Image 1: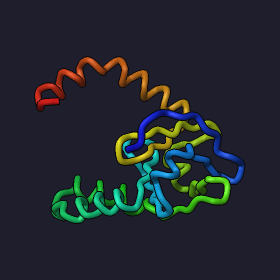
Image 2: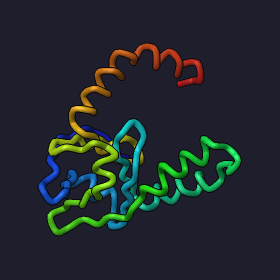
Image 3: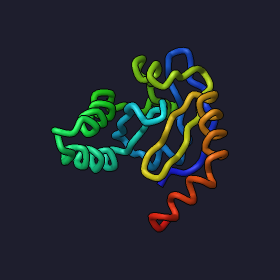
Length: 143
């Protein structure tokens, strides 16, 4: 499980270091893709394969299913760590998430999210304001 929030910098060559404990949990094969809410998702290969299996079972006739599959799969790439524990962020993904130099690397259960620092601050502020309402809605489904 990935937990926590860390501030890092993307260097001029679009490389991003990740926390050592995240790197150990990710393993050697990792997938980066477009995420939701204008961030990027990083998955260990095992978790990625589980997600792909679920996506493959979505009904092709539903536009939401097609759209979600396109978002997740067309932007996906396998990335490797260099000798210093950095990954290269592809240009199109950097643009998608509007990543500048300062980013937030956040552990969220089975994945890592990469956010532009300013977008993360905006998202957190909004989420904190809505936390009570969200908790109430989730309580209706047993959480």
